[in-house]
Length: 98
Image 1: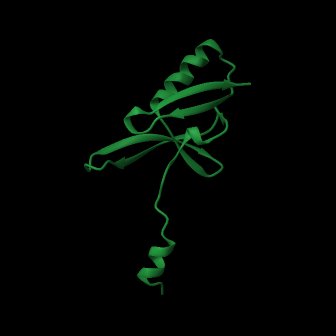
Image 2 (image 1 turned 60 degrees about the horizontal axis):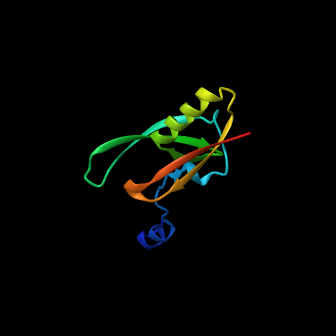
């Protein structure tokens, strides 16, 4: 039996990483929709890419940028996502890689 103290010490909060943490990401990576609740208790959904068993959140603006790049370059296979700012001031830049 484990004590509350031991469980608290071992506890690691569930946290979804951000796609910008990856050096490069294949456009063939699997995407799934997840749901959660915000601080006000309101439900919301978000997309995650699963890379090597880890989940990375994919902002909708990143999907829009990838779509625009694919229009100009349909053979695109890999991108790098750069994140600037925090919270509501976060901006993402998608860079096509060869």
